[in-house]
Image (tube, rainbow, N blue to C red; front, top):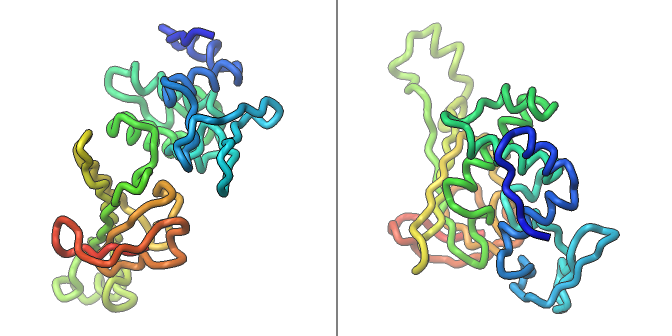
Length: 240
């Protein structure tokens, strides 16, 4: 089956409405040289038609995998048909597309559309669907707290906003940097996140995560590895 690129929105919706066609299209983009196991890199895999996934012939944990495993779409219940239409709309829009417009077009909530657009833009910016930290590439992580200092606030404003000391009542801004390799440059990602949102599923497995004493420790990032020492910047400690 040849890969076909739709030229209009009507063609894209009709083309990707077939799950088999959508799967073939995504597989050709992700694995142009043949399907490989995202866990061990082996090409000795078999397609399980009934389960719509592959199974690696090499004996190891998580031998079965779908096309979304190891990508930024992995932890989403939305099917590839909607993801590919979203990607088509984002690529062909002159000034991008809003989450409200995408929600109306796909018949989903605005929250889901916002989530999808961020994932698609992140993949397009990196030039890859793979998660950060795949194949053991080190990922540096650090945080800062954004918010006004209580000493400069009016008494009433301070009483309304400040409920505790230290980082309490501040906005946490998390920064992730995937160290460069010989083939590509470093990738930086920043997000405004609550502490509990920093989870292991944001990284590939296995991943080497480096931080500066933030709450990224054993148990918080399953599947990642610990490598004590300093990072390239000299002040980030590697942890998992």
